[in-house]
Length: 114
Length: 116
Image (cartoon, rainbow over all chains, first blue to last red; front, side, top):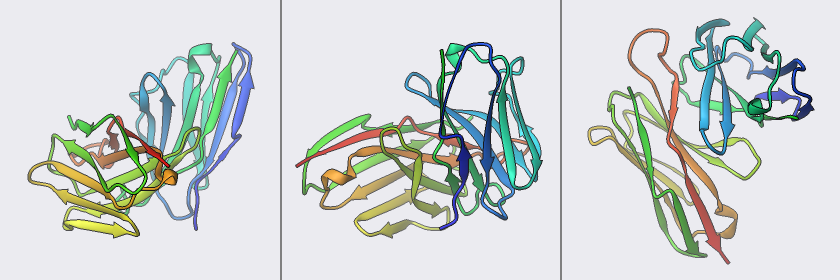
């Protein structure tokens, strides 16, 4: 089965450090999301790309978060500087043509900022 | 703005029971609806995708139905097993025009516990 690959699976870092999370979408998928999940807020959309272009990043704290797709096989989410409130699980998902065939999620990156 | 609601928030049943999870959405202009399962500490696994032209989809003991006009979907689990214990989420893509097209809106989920 094709899968969305996220690295790292777990990350523990100190407050103020830069964190980079990576996602390899399924080959051929042109739509990529980044979501954040916490117990309190549930799933929050951070960024949304189609054909590598960012369409919606209104859910992302712009002062510290940035999301890019340097090529069709890689999406990155960067936090600089990280804060304890950023501790969460970050999911990447990909789909084809705005999800007409549904979306596939990665296993997530569990981030802990101490 | 699309809003998705799932009822009940939590459900605890003995093994072997048939059960129904409910999902409702406020904007019926959707092109599909997807049900996911999430185990504790894990990612989201797609269970069923129903296109707007379909009434239902089946996979093993799972059956999902969709009634677009009333803004509702149900996930039916037959002969529940302890291994079915997980959080079940439904999601619909945003259909209005513009840059939000295709963006997923999730319900808060139903936490299912099946007791042996």
